[in-house]
Image 1: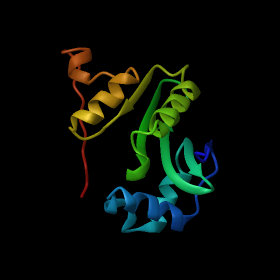
Image 2 (image 1 turned 30 degrees about the vertical axis):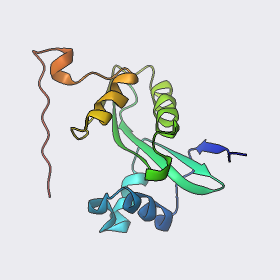
Image 3 (image 1 turned 180 degrees about the horizontal axis):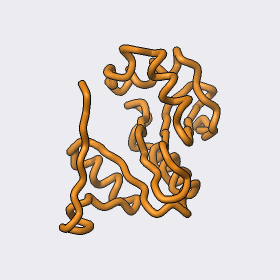
Image 4 (image 1 turned 45 degrees about the vertical axis):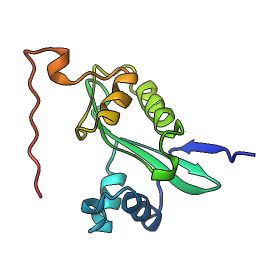
Length: 140
């Protein structure tokens, strides 16, 4: 029997949060656990996926609640990827922000990432409108 995966808005504790981010190799976030926790607490919306109370996924959004929602992080433990968990979380976020004009995210160039987001209705900016540009400034 497969264990049920539950989605909730319950914010994880710092230790399990660091463990989840480390499990997907996002060590830039885990070098400062207090800052990571503050970023989660400062998010507009946080949704987590749990199996038997173990944290297996998280998605968080920063938004004004009216015109823009920025999906900052979406991550699922490697052993649970391609199981539908990420899709369930993203669909719930899109439903939560269905009234918002723009839902935006930034990700790497893996083709699997592109395919995942396109399946959920996202379009790369230059594919959507050649007249649009997107910019980012990242501090290391």
